[in-house]
Image 1 (cartoon, rainbow, N blue to C red):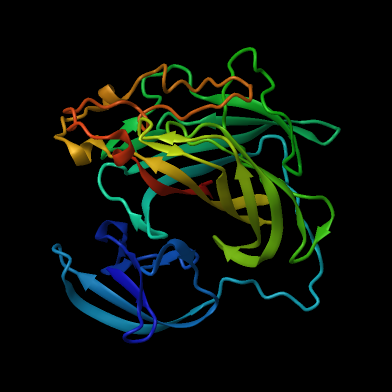
Image 2: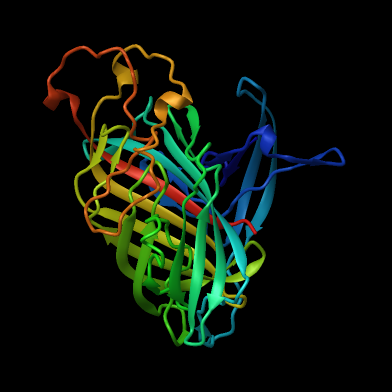
Length: 385
């Protein structure tokens, strides 16, 4: 099915949902539409748009296996994501509520989009540039200390994968050791020691806890923010610094949440697709965090990374392609989860940047081959349980 929002002749296509995504019960198919997800206008394909609370006309179309619309229905929906609060609204305390034995699992997923810049417009580049990554991080509280510090264990599951050129590759299949570490932090998400046992194995795993600020906060209040990121097999370990602001209060997964928006930046370079995509400047991050302030748990975090890049032609676009098996794409040294605690540039590795065997492309000028582009990484961190 496809969803279109708006009046006739001014409808905006929002999302297409496959039959497999439906929940079937009592001869009824139920589809879920994430009303907070961004949509993109063809006039500005790189600028995400969002629906505000209000009344909308919604058209639902059913399509056959060839994509032809075979039926449709119209209805009116009322979006209400914001939480009603009194005016003036009291301030709230934003605190990560941690206790010994607490255990949560977060699904991390990343999709990559590449745009070629022509006449200041971003045109999507199709072909063999599609890269995505997925992993599950378990966060458990192993110790609660009297001084307000907590020993957090972060562990990556063995089903972490990178999908590159249409091939899904499980990064740690067959590995006896999986990435894990113990991190010392406090209830505001401030990292006191990134790896308590660095001499045993120096893993790098992104933080899950949001960085918060003491005191009662109201809408519009801001504080200094730090976000770390690593998508195994795609990106290096990146530290972003900037500011966060309490934007508003919204419902997320049935809970009242503080919606925190952050604008951050990093100078860490990124290389993707075996160096075919290489950042040329700062990496900007727009982060939206949904924090259930009553229970002190982060429910969801949406991260949008954008950066200018040089884009070289993909071998799949310029020459014949040989079949690629997962074991050809995987190399334990390149995919090593061990990263030492230095500040040297840590370029991405693994299937997303692994060299592929292919028929040599026709000779051409290096300058003519390289294009100016923009890269966007859409990352979602979502509480599963």
